Length: 193
Ligand code: GLN
Image (cartoon, rainbow, N blue to C red):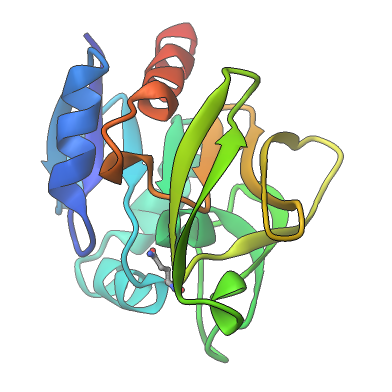
């Protein structure tokens, strides 16, 4: 089974660990550069992207993370994790940095202006209807030509799931619903890599 790290600086780590295990991977928590080096792939959980970026910097993980993403490590970011994987963000703090990797503009707290948290049903990657939980979620404002759109959500048919090569991102939290299809899709990506 592939060893998949879950970035464990902040956010809902345990739920991702459980979903990965149920999807046939060997999950491990990643807090230090040496732990990052040992994984085949990485999940970046939901939480608060400004805090996650500052902690990654404080734990000397920011540059190692950027390097591994740049060198092709598969990664999946959920919500704040999606923000971390965006090449460009809107609605961030002035100095907020991301890891980048996916050629997209992500708008922070985008749905949240209308409603803080909500559920929607969407079709993820053509795999049928899926319940999706959004919590102060971002949406994808625009994508480059190399980015595949894997899911749209009401209200507004916003882009909420994307893939570019070995990088996957969702605005919603599949780790909270007990539906392992997104994690299984990622584990498949890692196996094919
Ligand atoms: N609003 C958060 C951020 O900007 C993301 C919310 C989440 O991950 N549930 O980082």
